[in-house]
Length: 148
Image (cartoon, rainbow, N blue to C red; front, side, top):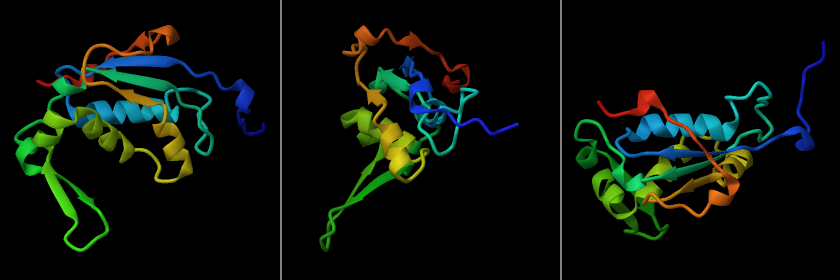
């Protein structure tokens, strides 16, 4: 039996919408990364982008467990001396919740061209409204991601 490798014409891409209200950041990010990579499909191939599109709404209502909002930090460096910028996850979620979720998912995808291509299929919105209604996204719920 030969190994199956899907062609570009055989790959079907679905759209899913995830309501992140009251869900834990890391648990949502792992499930979203799994869908973006296509690991939920029987046609999954590690070197081909077989994943689906994911729209995350209510990103501003995502939850961090314990007091990680004060303990965890996000670092950026401009490349210049003294150019390190640090902010806590609590501040990041308050100011730019889309960036917090996108960064968490990005860390769970491959760090190469394929991962960048898969990340383009992620759409994150702070509020409950998104402009992708024409794609008819299917709602998906992660029961393990709910904050207890």
